[in-house]
Picture 1 (tube, helix red, strand yellow):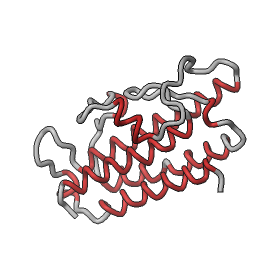
Picture 2 (cartoon, one colour):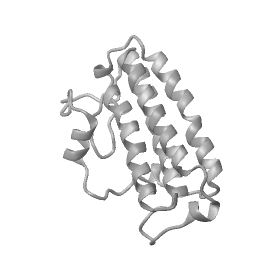
Picture 3 (spheres, one colour):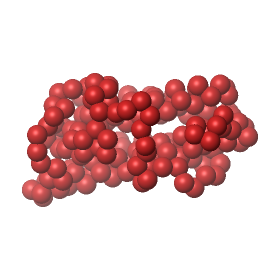
Amino acid sequence: MSQLDHLLTEVAFARTRYIDEVRNLTEEQAHWKPSAHVWSVVENTEHLYWAEHGGIWGIWRAFHAKQAGTPVWEGELIHRGLPIETIIERTWQAKEQVPAIAAPRMGGSLSFWLSAFASLQQPLSDLATALANEDLETIIHPHALSGPLDIRQRYEFLRFHIDRHRNQVMALGLS
């Protein structure tokens, strides 16, 4: 199994764990918030969709820009070789402000957002296929909070991010 296949599998497992954790909640449970400053399950799920959608789009963009000789980012790779957990530990505050593009903003049903979130595995898989013969450390797509991340780190981030929000929804004590 290639490194990229392994990373893709880890994201798929994280996605499945998240979906399995919340799929049987009622809509009332899915929209419940213990306070105005804590996201509901629906808000967490919508955020995961928007954040991953933007991340996948950005990786595709960085890949094509590198092929065209116009990389989206040039500079020092300050996180070279580091796992995503170390990068997050070094770059994130305890509670970060979500970029507007990844913020939950539409609401709606949990079933819709779970379906949308699940649908992202296919474009992520297609991206892995396109990247199969590439040096993952040479394609850089910066993260809004962590700075320049290579493709390996980006795939690790997707897994980390899904697990982080799974832990947040589990802390709500609804399942």
